[in-house]
Each structure stands twice: as C-alpha cells, then as structure tokens.
Length: 190
Image (tube, rainbow, N blue to C red; front, side):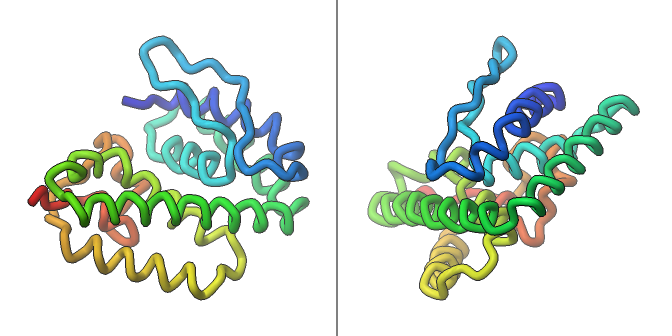
C-alpha cells in the first residue's frame, strides 16, 4: 500500500532530475530515491511514472503542510513542462508507444491463455492507466497507435467483469470510473 510520503519522496527526486531527463535521449532514467522500508522500489523516471505518482498523491488526505508542498511540486512541474514543451511531448509520445506495446503483449498473452494470465491483471492494468495519462500529454499521437489502443480496449471490454475498484481504496477519487473504467473489475479467467 502506498502513502503520501512514498509519493512525495519520488516526486522530489524526479523534479530534481526532470530538466536533464527531458533534454536527454533516454526514455527511462534512474532515480536516486530510496523507497521507505517495506515498500516497493521506485520506478525509473519517465513522464508517465511522474504523472502517476502525482495523480496518486493527489488522492491522499494531506496535512496543510503536505498540501502546500504538493502545490509547490505542481507549480514546479508545470513550469518545467511549459519551458520544455516540445521535449515533454516527445518523451510522452515515445513512452506512449513503448507502454502501448507492453499492454498489447499482455493482452495477447491473456487472449491465448486466459487461465494463466488473468491473475496478472491487477499489476498489468497500471500500463493502461499510464497510457491514459500519457495520451493527454503527447500532443498528436500516430493514428495507428490511437486505433490500436481503441482495439485493445474493445478486447479488454469483451473479457471484463465489472466490479469493485481494484487498487487501494484511498486512490479511488483520483481514478474515477470515467475514464478509468478498467480499474473497476477484473478479467475473466477462462
């Protein structure tokens, strides 16, 4: 289970590296932040991971001091995003393409053997969430990729069992049923 402090640590480290990351060719950038004991290690810096961390943090109940820090982080992020708009959109678009292929691969594996892959949905669905976050940041995406995502959503919907929100309850306000319908259920196992 995540916490506000977990997300703050990641975002502080990410913002310190963001300008250099945006100007580099690498899509994935090491982040020198140590996750609190008992939590999962931090993902590498990408636009998608940064946006996901911010979205998760916005869901938590924050103290006044934490809310003030969140506001500073958002302002710094938007300032860098606007300053390096072309680089931001280029990284977002490249990451969208990479995440789309990984999402497609998972759904193809699931389609070929649902009983062996349905249980991975809880983990793999983060890729679909990242695609939504990146879609809004990428400028103009290639029509073939937009069409592929739509086709993958159709496949997912056909095998989807609606239900409860599958992530931590604290996050529900940041990920409402529209557009995040795929977080409210599971895949059929057979």
